[in-house]
Picture 1 (spheres, one colour):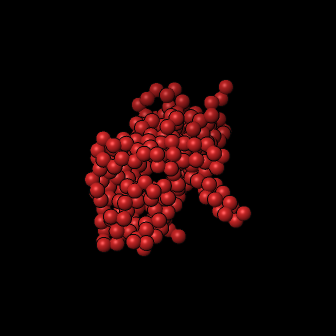
Picture 2 (tube, chains in turn blue, orange):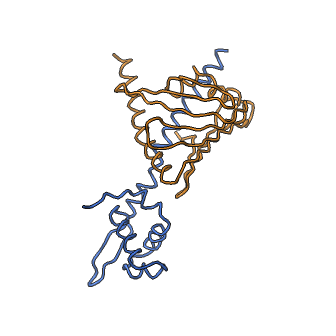
Picture 3 (tube, chains in turn yellow, cyan):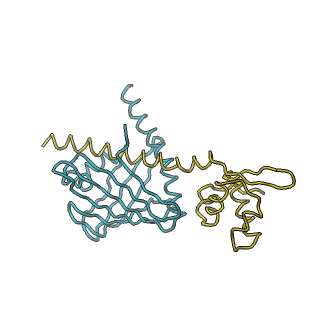
Amino acid sequence: MEIRRDVFQAIADPTRRTILSLVMLQAMTPSAIAENFDSKRQTISKHIQILTECQLLTQKQMGREIYYHFNSSKMKEIADWLVPFTKMWDDRFNKLESVMKKYKSKK
Amino acid sequence: MEQKTKINAEDGKQEVIITREFDLPLELLFKAYVEPEIVEQWMGTKVLKLENKKHGSYQFETTDPKGNKYRFNGAIHEFSPNKKITRTFEFEGMPFGVQLEFLAFEKLSDDSSKLTIHSLYESAVQRDQVLKMGMTQGINMAHNRLQEIVNKLK
């Protein structure tokens, strides 16, 4: 059974963020990625798998090797995720401001 | 129009900082947090209880367009008029835990002021969950607003 991965959970891990910053610069094979870490190869593979499942990384077969690419459109989704939250607060505070301006003029 | 509210939520941290400058004198900004009938107007909630003092507590209730009621509450730890409110925040019946909130009120000029809300969550994961819920809630609120306008047109 495939577990649906949460993209925000994926970037909460420091190792996975490091993997992303490496692959962001150039497409890499799993072994090239693993060379940057002291952790076991399997541990890194697991992290790569999670990043792939939540579409932050995409796989491309090049001859006998698999290369991982960084998926910038998925990353943009993350950058945008605070937008609605900010909008909610901004609307709320605009309301506060208008309510208090009326309050002031009534006095 | 540019948004006047700034939100800072650094990756992997368990806090959020919300800042906003108002074209309001400090006293009026503070009053908006203190007077129950004013809180009700801008928050769009019903104030069930609001005790503005140390060891005091508050409880608010919102109703969604379907008529479902949501309550949130907290305890007030510090209440310094026109300066600072320290309180907890909990969404009742939601698995988001309790947040600790520091609200700092500052005077910028005679008719402008600044509010900084510093919220701390139990963990970074929990913070992200709340922020994501904010998205859904923001959408719900927009629907609410729309519903109100539509009702007025009838």
